[in-house]
Each structure stands twice: as C-alpha cells, then as structure tokens.
Length: 135
Image (cartoon, rainbow, N blue to C red):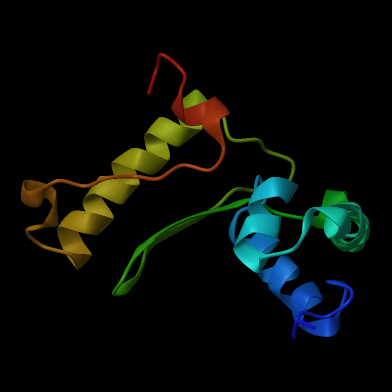
C-alpha cells in the first residue's frame, strides 16, 4: 500500500496548479503533471481542473474591458523601474513600444546607475510589439 492519495484532485493541488498557471500561463498539462507528480490516469482530471481555473479568470477578465487600461511594467530584484500606463482605448504598437523603451533607458539611467554599462536583458511576454522591425 502506498501513501499516495487515490486522486490528485484536492485543495493543495488545486492551489498549486493555480500558482503554476499564474506563473506561466503557457504551461502544458504534461508539465504541470510532472511538477506535481500526478499519475497519468489523473491527467484528465487535471485538464478539467485547469479548464475551470481558466474559466474563472476569463470571467473576471471579461467584466468590463472598455474600462481597463494597459500597463507595461519593468522591474528588477530591487523593485519597479518604470510603470507605463496606456490611455484607455489605445493599443501597444511598435512606435509606442519604442517610446516606452526610450523612457525605460532614462529610468534605468536615473534609478539604477551603472546598470546600462553592464547590460540589460528584457524578458518579454507579448511578442507582437517588441518583435516588429521598428524596435
């Protein structure tokens, strides 16, 4: 007899799945199952759990999209370097992103002197604006 529970659907795993999805929304079910050591037979249940968590988040996100603003946040281990809030109704495009990067460079120069000389690495989540030829 093993100490493993008969099902992987429990409050602890629900919380852990939610945390994993919040950290990496592109994480695949297979990767979640490996991290949580969930047996193959429970992967279907994990899929149902993941779907219910996503639908909860989508309901919250679709509340009133017209009243939302888009924020671009740049930070490091010491804290926020730049918070750029887009006016309502505007989208991030290549020109806007270039402008934001210029402001980021000035903010780094002001708040983290010496960091530009050592080199800055940006990790992007939304690929469209920063992969345009203009940027």
